[in-house]
Length: 324
Image 1: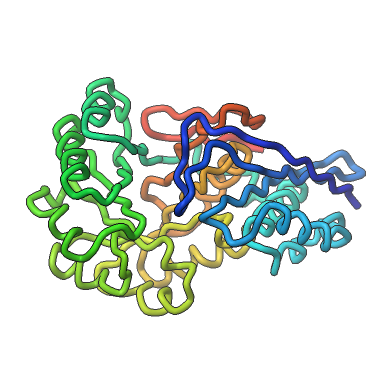
Image 2: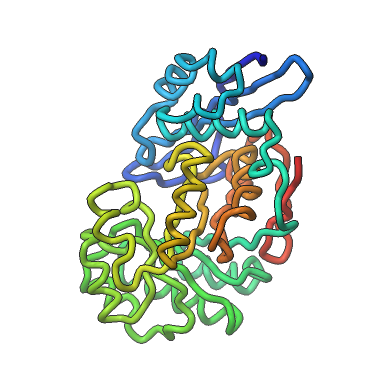
């Protein structure tokens, strides 16, 4: 038997973060801690974001409290059916307390990450020239939706990055089909790893692939049952981007990645700007998933100014994955 405690914290971002239609300077999170009679313990973090998660933190905590007995019994099934952020946090806490290898024993000591860039062309040149992207195989670029500005950013990055480094273009559904084609026209295709959810109308993604030849990554569309059914193996789709706290429990994340692998596609795990405690567990999990060898989107460990979790070290574009 174990004891469940829940501690709420306010975390402040080191820079404003955009989530859906919201621009956030801070977030609310809850540390879900389990302490067993034998001294073993496990911690998970529920941190739903406005504009990204459907549930609020209050709703996540209420759902967890409703399963207190099963959670304190360390029953993995207790996490199933909870709101996604609550399910992930609870399953992590239970899994760590039970010493589940999926969460405590990585299969690799290093996990390759993509760098993340959000800024203008001048900032792109400065970052590239300063060596901010040194060692990374890929750079994820946040596309704003202003064609001239976005193209200037891409040109600046390609001019400063090494010849083997590639770009991931993430537009969060801001572009029309014509604007997306205009944005990538003339770019060297071998330097573009994929386009992540670029279109206002996701059903046009196969058309975008047909007309540009560029690979497509799905993110938001995987959380809409109708779009997932229509697009998950559509022509051009190469990657499924999974944010664990939007998928649900650790078991659900693993099942989703296994399905993706059976479809002949690859999984990239991405952060919902998660606190470091969550990033640590996601990184360990990533080493144990099938078809998950691309760079993962977990280079966000320094986004919270007052994160109580342990520092995660990134060396030459890879996260040093901690054990235990």
